[in-house]
Image (cartoon, rainbow, N blue to C red; front, side, top):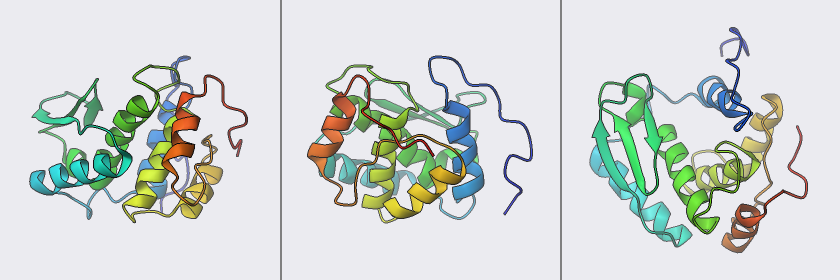
Length: 176
């Protein structure tokens, strides 16, 4: 594994203070960029399945050139970059799907930072549900990379995730 924070972390905007820390954590602690590629059909299947589990409508998947970004979520649509290999890995898809599900569970309101503790609760839950990384593993990874999260618990309760996503100010995200 590469040395943690070998290069300085880019400064995140004030509106989303842990954005680049989350990106760095995903790249350095989780990785899977080269060997967990997903075809377009499997990606569609994964998105439909996960959205069905969380009781939200599936977003539309679109492939286009996004410049420097591998993917982005925008109000019901996940755009994936045709020119970036990272756009087809399972972690990128689950990350963008977490944005979609977080928005849907929050009652279609932008209440939180895009990569805040509430988003991380949803992302951790998706990774656990898909059997990619268990919640306990993500807790340890978030602790090492000092990423804040609201603990979704180990039962993957949809009611608990809804409560987390609808809170305007979280009671106490795990400050690790």
